[in-house]
Length: 320
Image 1 (spheres, rainbow, N blue to C red):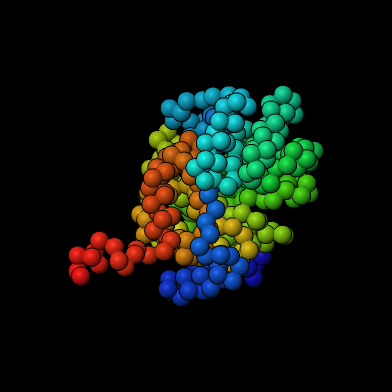
Image 2: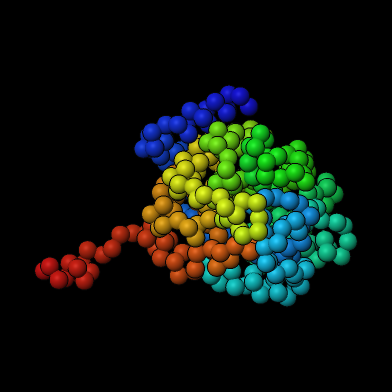
């Protein structure tokens, strides 16, 4: 861990152009730089979570004005899956505001949801809080591809953000996921008042998981009125780019996901994040309960990454 942490800190402090050059070389070695996976994330159970995560509008500890709803029925989720697929999504992710899911009718319903997503020929990912070994095994048997369970921040900074669940609780859930043979989706959030050293420590913790996570979402805090982090100052987008670049170098084979907070980023900042090694985004106007770029904005963003404009277009004709 100490060696990886030292490497992360050294990388994070490099001149930005040097860091980007190295990260992009690593990215091209292990990935098609033109391929960006499109995902959709649906909140299947919203609000009332007993955890006190300082960033989360779904926590029962805070008054955020969020409309709570119980577990969606299978028909509602099926309609969302069909819509996501028609809009080009390749992975369908489902999130539920639970500390941990209990065995019983609701877990059985989630199992049916996973089977339905797989029946639509899409990758299936869920985030349901803490899991037992037997629950992870049932999800695997249903066809689940990936389980999301973020570490959020460094071990040292963690207690300043969450007090109702320990860092090791999170790592133990990841062990259950791995034991069942499910891919791990695990990342964190930047902009919560943590130091650059904390960001490096988070990336080192992720890079030291064996095997490394197949998926690493990097989120920017979206401050929510009513939560303890409501007055947090916006982070410089280049700090996000640095974080993604270091993640790409430390975890060369992982899919790095440019996740929450894109709504505050310019097109140019997002393109720089892709150059640094991000190769996945979430489609749809809402990411669980928070705003996400509009579909037409994302289509324009992705179109700008494709081939350049025709040279015999309107401008060329005007100059002829």
